[in-house]
Length: 447
Image 1 (tube, rainbow, N blue to C red):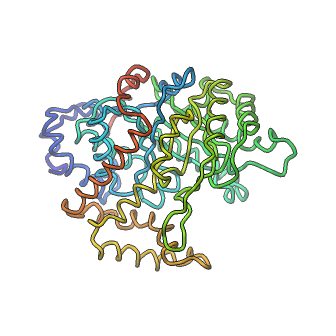
Image 2 (image 1 turned 30 degrees about the vertical axis):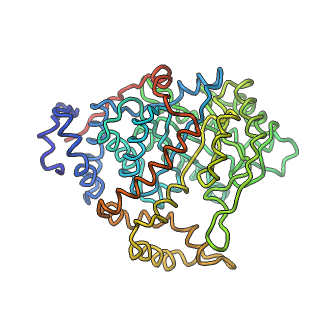
Image 3 (image 1 turned 180 degrees about the horizontal axis):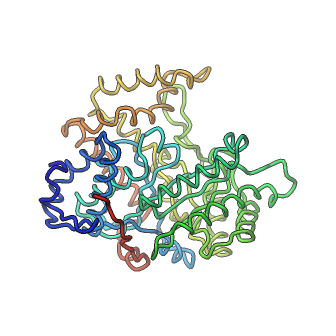
C-alpha cells in the first residue's frame, strides 16, 4: 500500500495526522516508506516523509533527547555504555533489525545517528533518515523515546580556512535542518580547528571551544518547547594523538568561560587510538587496534566528577575485536559510535549476490578512481570507498528480494545482540523512561 490510500488508515485534521487503525498502519508501512523515499517530486516527498514521522509519534515512537539520561550519568555512572549506530544503507531494514533486538532485550538506551559526511555520500538528508528510523519503529511496534543524533556535525578545516563564515553558516544550516527533522541530539565537532602552534593548551583549544560554544548557542536557540537537546563536544580529532586530561580541562573550562547558554554539554568525544573504519591491511583485512582504555577511564571520570558530563565518547569502534567491548562499561565510557562493522557485515555476507556486489565495486573503481592512493591495493581501495556505494544504488539496495535481505538482517541481529550485551544496555528501558520525558513536538503539514 502506498500513499494513494493513506486516508484509509490515518485522518488529516487541520494539518495534523491522526492514526485511525494502528494494525493497518503497521501492515502498510513497508509500502508507505518506499513510496516516500522514492517519490520524485520533492515537495510531495517531504510531505510523505513528514506524514510518516507524525504517524510514528501518533503510535508513541517519539523522537527524544537523551539529555536527561546523561544528566543522571553525570551524577553517577549507571554501568552501561550507550551504542550510537550509524546506518549507511538499507536504513529501514537495518533499523527494523535493531528495534526487533531492542524489544527482545528490553533496550532503551540506544541512539540512531548519521554524520555530516554520511548525509552526503549515502544521500540521506536528516528528514529521510528520521522517517526511515521512525517507520521501522512503527513496523516493529517499538514505543517510547527514539534517539536521533547528528554525528560529527563538523567544521571542515580546509573550508573554514578559506571562508570561515560560510563554513560556520553551513553547519548552522545543517543543525537547523536536523532539529526540524527531530534530531534532538547533536554532536558538534570543531576539534579540527585546534591550533597546536600556540604555546598553551588553553590557547590551542581556543578555536575549538569558541566555535563549539557558538554552535551550541545556535542549537539552544532552535530548541522546541519542552526539549533540551543533548549536545556533545570533541577535543581530539579521531585518528590523531590520544587526548589528555589537560586538553579536556582546557576545552571544558574555555567552553564554560565563553558559552552563553543555560544547559551545556552532556558528553565529550576523545581520541584513544581508533581510526574511523579501522586500519585496512593490503589484503583488505582490518588491523588489530589497541585502545588506550586507561586514558578513556581517566577522562570519563574527570569529565563526570569535575564537569557533570555523562562521560567520554568512543568513536570508530565497530571494527574492534569482540572482547574489547566489555571494557567500555568497565571504564565508564558513556557512549560508543558504531558504523563500519555493520556495513562490512552487509557487503561481506554470503547472501549478497556476487553480481550485485561486483556491480557496485566496478562503479566505485570508475567513479572514485582519483581517490585510489599510490601503493594502495584494490582490496584497500574497495574497503575505503564502498561506503559510497549505498547512495547511488539506494533503490537497488531497497529492492533486493527478501530471500537476500532477511538472512543479512539475521546476521546483523546477532551482532546487535552481542554488542548490546557487552555494552550492558539490556533492560535499560526503565531507566530511560525514568530520566527521559518525551515531548511530542507539534508539526503542522500543509496539505
